[in-house]
Length: 250
Image 1 (cartoon, rainbow, N blue to C red):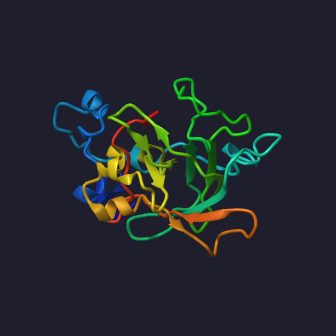
Image 2 (tube, one colour):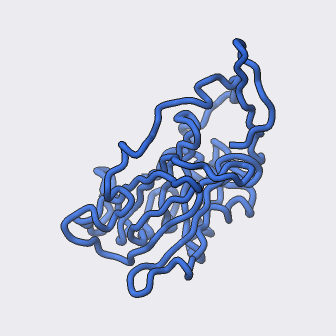
């Protein structure tokens, strides 16, 4: 969250004003290649509202909301899930590169076979009774977060002919206040399905798309136990991580 100017609101109070993100850093709300956006995209120009106190305040999302195993999706059941164990870690940063401490980070994903534990996901891939596919963590004082999970699989969807989603993990972040929520997706390097994925390619700027791809982290890989991927998330500014152009594809 990058402060640029101060905005007076009376009674001696001022609110920070945040610079706008780069125009091509995020997908347009109407992305015809991603079919469902045609139905839900706004039909009229957006109206920008002035920032108020709720932009910088909100419910506290503290440690009391985090369970002991919420960050480790491989230990939430009596037995381990199937698939390649991975560590996903990184930092949450504002537009000036400063860490955002003690902010809530939530993830959800498909299992190793590419299937979500959701009633509408009925494609013939096995469900894993030992994998829910959801987790949450708070960043530390330096803005770091860490999850242990399973490498998600690709899966088919009905957006276009022979459509398959690249392997990905959904992220939800609340920044410094409840109303500053960002939802994005983390992809894996070298995925062969990038070329035909309309959600990934709806981001106009190729460099911005690269900011959704995690970096393989060999130094962070745990020998004989788990591969590691690093994924830093920038909430605002010209280097911001692209947010999603619509609801989850599931």
